[in-house]
Image (cartoon, rainbow, N blue to C red; front, top):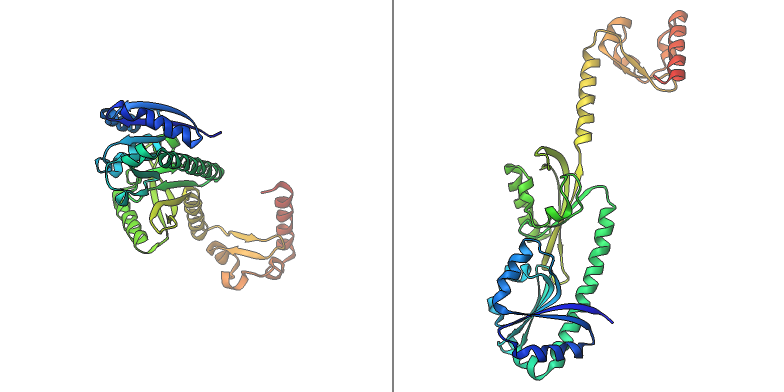
Amino acid sequence: MEQANILFLREDAKLDDIIKQCIDLSGMNCQISCADLSRIREYFISCRFGVENTYDIILIEGSATMLTPDDVENLPADSIICLSDIPFEKCQIQWVKDKLFEEIPIGIAAHSPQCLAYAVNRNIKTMKKQYKDQKLVKTLIQLIPNSITLFDIYGTILFNNARLIGLSEESLRGKSIFSFLKRGQRRIIKNYMKLALEDNHSCTFKSEVKTKKGSYTPVEINATLVRDTTGEPLYFIAILTDISIQKEIKRKETYLSHFIDTSKDGILALDRNSYITLWNKGAEELFGYSSQEVLGKNINVIFSDDEIRNALKESLQKVKAEGY
């Protein structure tokens, strides 16, 4: 039997028995907690500050108009059911920032407990399945070496697999992605998000992200917008690849290339078959051949003097034997 943890926020205790009857009808093994509606703000604050007090469903007695999307988001439950006094035809069931929010006329709940029992049963099973799916996705994401970040349409981090920045997944959740970017780069990200919301535009670009130490790491970002089956935007997913190593390699290659080009010593390089792959200006002056004349040719063709060829042969054998 499924188990569920339910919180019932109500103006008074007159509906407690009806709610318990509805839960019994749902066939779920439920742990029910009751609290006065006046304490609802305490639950908002507790959730914001990370207090571990979560529920599968929160039942609220009162008008749904009293709840803003931010209120729904901050309630510590995956499913919110509001027992409202509005007419049945105006009641809604919708996803609000990854939470299943539903309105049910309080009269129907009182006179037809099966209706509420069905909603409780359905919502718990829906959220349990979503939780299992999310857990699988997160497990797969943790196996990926790149940094993966999910953030909502406002830039708030929903999930991060704790790569690059040096902070834990828990400490990153709820923070703005813009706080880890330089001011000029924030505008680029915002423009991309605007384009994606308009036409599902995906993009790849280079940026820098701020680490725990306060330094900035160069990254390549691949980002796309994920929508639900109705076309509504759910979240952005961005894959960040650390390119600091590539940049350092490129810097060293540039330095080495400049050193070889400007050296007065003759520097040449051969492949395993003794074909010339590098011939600097020092070699041009020393041997009298331009790089265009010798590149791609076998060293034995260029040097016909036996003494030079033997010296080169000995040097090559020594390099192969000693590995340098």
